[in-house]
Image (cartoon, rainbow, N blue to C red; front, side, top):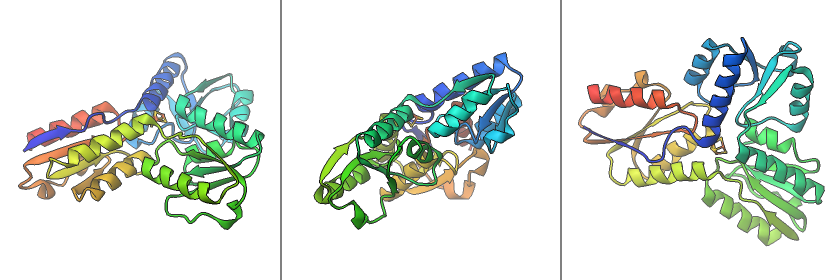
Length: 277
Ligand code: F3S
């Protein structure tokens, strides 16, 4: 069996930066508190917990005068201020691209635009961006119909960083046709796009595809969708131990792609396991 790795794949700039920042903080402090999972990969979070990371559900769960960490996906402006006020030190791991989307949302609101975000309303990154818009803000997924109340309004459009470009272009087109005025900021991250294109390319010459990444990782899910849309038999795993030997039987060329929060050590482990097979 020949093994092919998508290129680029795995850790994106923002998550790598967040992990490095967190590791540095853990070297200097016994514990660091993260509100919610710092990145969407449970295996990597478990590794960081062993170094002193404590993941909490609310700001109130963080004792005063401790070190807090803002995850790669960011938090709302309100939570950001709360963390800053109660921590001895706040370490900001927000990806600079997510920060840009937050700033755009804030500026659009101030300029009187209704903010429309293409994304998943439940995703922490989207919740964070929404929290920076001081006026009306709506989140639409690619499946949603454009609500009639946006007709004739001033609309600013942004995207969750991990959305598909084609979905964003389509949304912009439809909103342009009904709105009075439109301002568009394509906040889709290039790292995401490059990883999506790499999967499409790889799908052209492999028989099957393994996508490794957290089940709570939006960008990993998109990679799975793209692979399936290329009619490639695809398996989504979080850990190499989940590999299905029977599924791999008689496969000549296997492709591997990893989500933007999948650490290198997990990809290596997967490649190693496949070689042993
Ligand atoms: Fe940032 Fe893009 Fe990664 S927004 S967290 S570099 S996917």
